[in-house]
Image (cartoon, rainbow, N blue to C red; front, side, top):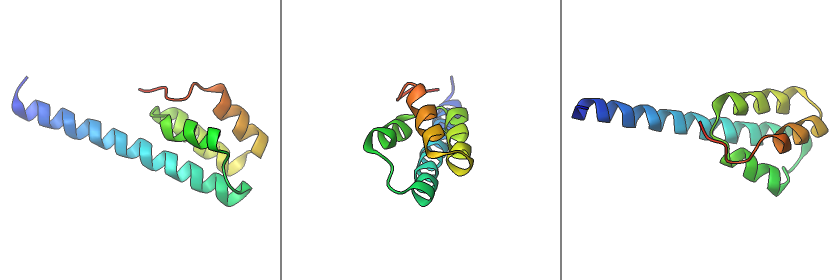
Length: 83
């Protein structure tokens, strides 16, 4: 693997991590705007999640679902799952 390929791979990995962090933060903010402070266990699960499709699903649910639906969805996925 060339140096250029390594740099490009590193940049792409950083981009994906940044997207996941941004999606997690947005999900927490949306939840808190609708329901008040997010319980610490849920916040930890959201912050630990790195799977973008899961974070997108949680984000949409935080904007459209009930508090119980959001809690159930986040509790059903293993915290810290990465992809």
